Length: 295
Image 1 (cartoon, rainbow, N blue to C red):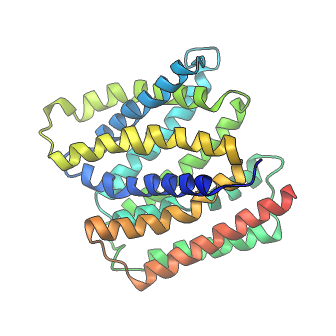
Image 2 (image 1 turned 180 degrees about the vertical axis):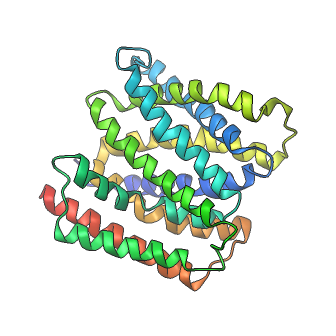
């Protein structure tokens, strides 16, 4: 891989900002839309730029090939469940809390990778990282200002949603030889198919009279935070590799907290900042352990 340029770092920061901005936009979307509708519109609108790129680059979409059970399973676990859980949870908790909890995916992926893959085992550095990050999560849940008896379950659901991303990533290894654009387009198609009857039965979104800000936010979530963000991720991965792209994990929770304060005036307590720092340090050690293994 080539040495990263200023343009590469700029794109990495833009990707982090896009993904971090998703959380306060989810909050705004919940003012008018139900969680299933938000999840459905995200995958439906997010599929548009991905499928257009596949059409432009003449990449075959294999959503209905013999591997369709994998695409459907990954679409359900990696998109349907977390998108719903995040939208449901953010109704009751601050969006900055969601950004922090979702940033723990490198920690949970380390744990699951140890048990379900052959070459992602624990080492001392990764173990230290997981323990520090776990302390950050526990300490965050001790903050009675942002997490209380009324939204405790919602916070846990968001944390479970982050774990679903990891499980979906493990399943993706089964079809890792296929092109990223093909896989992403296929799982977006299946996520849309799965959510269509559910949203029609449970929420009947055609009966909504949404606010303008909620409408703008849900369109942004689909087209930008889902579709364009994935395409930008592809570009960074292709140009600079996985280790460089994975640095986005440090930036997302930081930007998420800052953006939530700017746009929603959400409370930032001392415990939130300490938890955020602990989780970022934990992620650093986990990734340091991965790099040491690669070297």
